[in-house]
Length: 323
Image 1: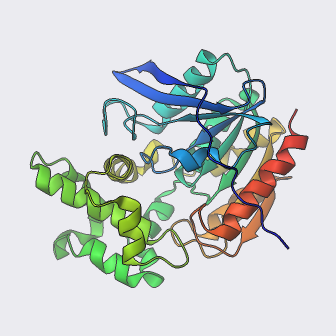
Image 2: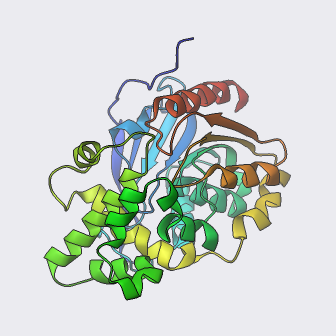
């Protein structure tokens, strides 16, 4: 059977910056059909930002595709800023962006941290969400953070974990994240860049079922200051150190708000996701009666072909399901 593929790359028909307060300006762009069904791409990280492939999961004839870089991420300004940068500020930014675009309702497409932020947004503003397609679910609990950045992934990627902690003094390895955050805040650019590079290298090493050193270096480019990956390292480590700024078990305890609003939810999960293990997707599925859970024989990355195919197929299904 033929697998669904990404849609061709298209250029935005509109793009710009939106001031959202606290000195932050969000980069945004719109692609596809201006009169189509609105879909908001919620990127991961936090801090990773969007790229040209982010637009390619959606039929440009059917969807009005909205992309934005979250506070401090990628093209948003100021770059890498942690000032007033929390989950709740990002939720507020999403609401402001939709109001700015005169959109009353939108479909949310979020992967990894993007799934977290989409869920928190839908809990806060369920009346503005028509549906959600979530990938590589991350619930943002202490145990989820501890798994990825406290050694859990070592069971599957011991080489990547060993490299990651080798830069942390043995006495401080119980809080590797805190050590990385401190080093990335260094005024010494060489030290800051080194730890941003190593943080991004670790996460990118865990993305797919089969990732080599050459693959990671190709993604990151030769410069350690590659914008999207450096902002991801700075912002993501800060969020993880602060428990994603959410109360304990916030998402699972508030899923009833999403269910009560009868929001269509599909979850596409890599069966062998080493960054966000499938148990998180299963718990979310159980907390959202009526949701669809689709497993793919893949890792975490939406670029793994089996998971790519599931995402594209689900978006085609939502073309008919969403009014």
